[in-house]
Length: 521
Image 1: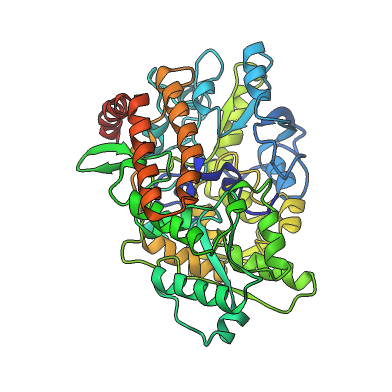
Image 2: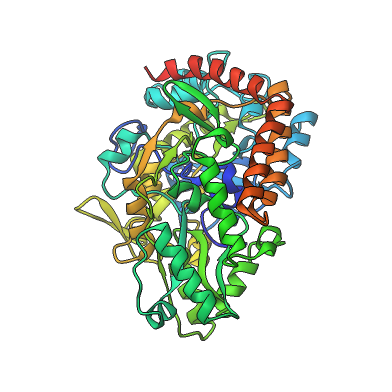
């Protein structure tokens, strides 16, 4: 699998934006939310008080599988906690563990947050903080987001930030989990360097490529990142399985007025021969890379890392051509609405042998020192702080082998989007430029992210059925033989969703939204 931010592997679920679902939280210099932890004194490790706790990571793709390396060692030195790590073998393992009651001390998960936010399974953080760590301060927004119907909060997700926090931190620019398209520089030059400042410009260039290089695929796309960039250009505000808001009410994204324009555009790419039908059925996320590195594709739809990562692979393979990123906004309507509540959270289970050590361990990770250690590495060894307000990294943050080998970033059992967003700020890289452009068109509506169906609920069952139908029908729209056929198939998809009970789901979502958005007032 590709060595980029994990949100990519969640596909749109996390959204783009992933989508930008991946931008966020309070950070680096301790402004906004965040937390405090006591510093100083003899370290627990030196005093012989190291405690071993078991951690289950509910992510089969997780690249770091052992508590080792300089970051883990430094965290143990500071907290006196060492983790015995188990990474899931599949996405069914944790639900089975919950059902059997066979849980470890700590669980880190993104897909079972609602299920574990249960007093029968986990300790409420608020109770542990009051009892063991009264100086552990978490900001009201994060508490509001994570408070359940019983009045408790059982975790705080990492990778979250408010609009205000992101605005305060110039150099926090988001994560790899944002869409982008890169194009071949040499071919563009051979075509006379035509400008690409709009979607029309881009499609015209794809046409020139198809005409002059008939054996080349004009646009190849990663199987997990087919739609996000273009949805962004049309300003649709959500993925196909998400919610959008107008005048205080929410509706399902497929009914947005601009969604039909998006589908017609995607269909035109196919009918003009700019994309492959088989691209929608690729077996894995390496096939598009093979087209790129072998020189068989002009444009590559992936994330904001596309050009930088492609160029590294091409060079290592002996290639001489390079890619450059298209602008993040190719339309006056381009927009990103971040409804993300963060990525994953850590739970202290009722099987935990030392809840006090566990909440204090999280408290340290939530401190300014802990967040920087987790996300950037050991200060002085891996980075130094630039007076302008960002870390000067002594390594390439896209070098997955180095990152994983040193345990950088992946122990973000508590972190935030501001600190995480700074990891992407590397002056002179194309990814940094793309993320700065993306940040400029991003607004935040976390209250929409609180519209979540509960496990085993009728709303979840209904939404799952509708989403599965959309997943199957959307490809038929993309691959329609005419625009008229694409429009008819789109209208049929909407009608099918409505016949399945879409309005009932929308009514439930609005009732939920009215209740949840009051938490932010």
